Length: 139
Image (cartoon, rainbow, N blue to C red):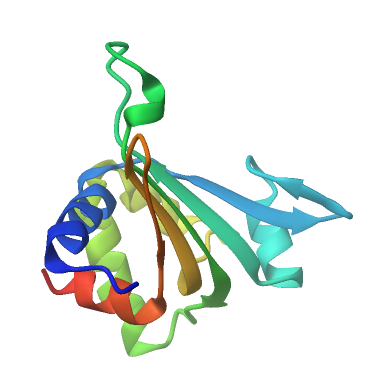
């Protein structure tokens, strides 16, 4: 069942509205959601990114909107035109991040989603296709 605009709007808002997400990578035979992510992604581009609505401590946390995107990452080379655009977007969203770009081991990656699972709230779960994610990105 294709998602309609009434579901895609909240999905787009969730992705754009959060500043923190958990990135899970695979390395050394184990999944990992903290640290070592660059080394893992350079060796194996499979990744999952989980984004959740902020938990205020009120109500049932299972009603929080959340999405898990699964796909493959592509490193954005520093000499590619896309790098400058991605860096500008990154710094606009996180102004204090500018010094990171001076570190030799800081890389920018693009997640190419293959599928996503969007939970809009309790008992409101959807499988999201790359095409639907693309539609949501222009809302």
